[in-house]
Length: 75
Image (cartoon, rainbow, N blue to C red):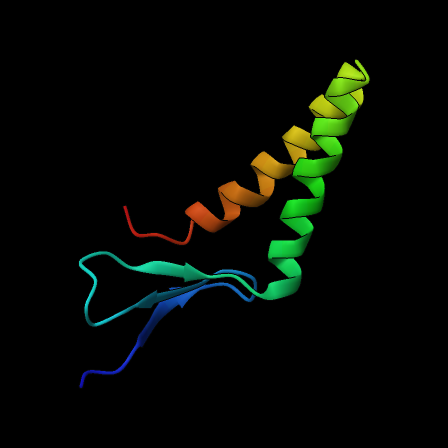
């Protein structure tokens, strides 16, 4: 069996290649995933309350975080 290969990334977004997959993936720590989840839930709540500026701020932060995760993939 081939092993998982770390091929780059950052502390919070490690790029790995699983032997059975054609494309690499990103490993995200549990606390980082929980953080993303809390941002989504809070943005949803703010939108339901019609606090659009706060919802937008949270979505901008989510976009920044996810851009960092996507940015570790080779182009």
